Image (cartoon, rainbow, N blue to C red):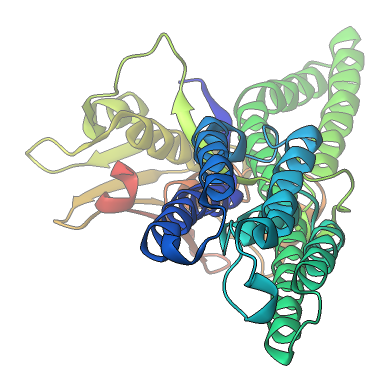
Length: 405
């Protein structure tokens, strides 16, 4: 069954922008309530009312613009900061005594939301620029700033720069993780293709080489050419299966978004129903292969059952290829509550120590990908036990919980 990998981008910045939108609304309400409870001290309350009305309309109207970095444009940031600076500088006009005490400005702590938008959009440098302008406006508004004024200005400046720096680090980490997960997805797809090639094309080329050599004449030349193509194809497949640690980072890693890998069926395929593993293994039974199975159905999800059956087929192909056509093989199916175990045993000459590693290095992927790779993707394991002269036993274990996922 053909399956494809889909990459879903999920940015960790989304919660930060949502928090900023909520902060702007709450601080807008705070600024309005602060004026309502202290309006008696304003010599020109009309100035404060007009500014706060503009602040409320602006905050509510621009909520969609603070939902993501793409929507938070530079013109919006400039207008937003201008509104905050205007409110700070209008405070002495509405309250003549504002410069003589350390009371709040008209926008109050709403101004910090404007600075934080700069930090989320452009990092610590943008945050330093915006917070510096706010600091200058506060100092000008106070006339003769006190120690508390300098303390508040410095606090906003340091906090905004720190948040901007954290955002930049998070984006770099996201790009690295995105690149690593994309490499993992590509590697898994190459491994799947390598298994399919081994189960079909490479097996046919190997058979043509053996038959052609046995027949001789023109068939021998055809067998020689098939052997050369088999070697070339094995080298190509093995060369493409580089571990992720050997692939350079390259690129920007997906634009700073964390990705989640989703292994999903093609759009035209319905949800896979459970399949009786016995029906998939029965065709392997014959004069040289004995199948021992439970009396009840061995149900597994369709993809898992087919992959497990394909791994059994690859193990039997290895028996015929390395132990000879006269070798005897036995398949034992065990259905346990938490897992399904399939054992393939033969009476061949066995495998010499270190031969599997050598074969993998030569690009022969029968055990590495067609058997172990399949079981690894199912969350299971494949164990190969062999004693020279006493045959080989391959035990395939698939946990039910992981197979269902």
